[in-house]
Image 1: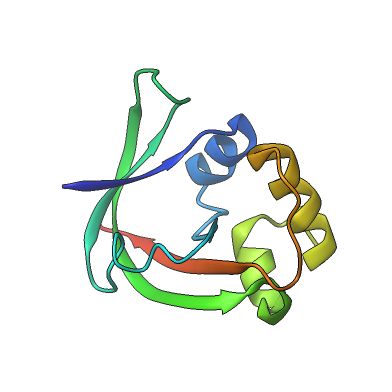
Image 2: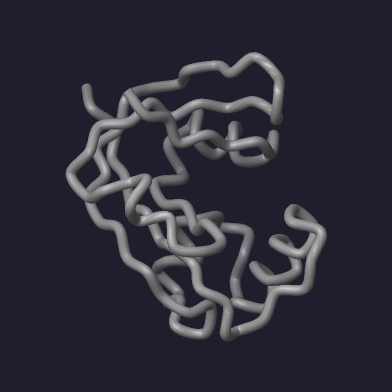
Length: 114
């Protein structure tokens, strides 16, 4: 089974209390995460052991430009991120490169399988 991994401790906290049901990934990763797939939601850093939190169903997978992200996308990604500019700053910190409104992102909505 595939996994959708989250490295940031802040995301693990949001996932644990089920406040996060969407992730925005840089680039077009829609082939790696096809809609209607089952994935493990995991946390852990690169080259580190991963912790499986739950199994999820990929409800919706959309490829967009950063400028096309909606307030719903941002809220479900992280309630603390209110604008696309906030997300860009967060991504620049994660990816250590410049991100623009023209960059392609993949928006993945998921729901826990009980």
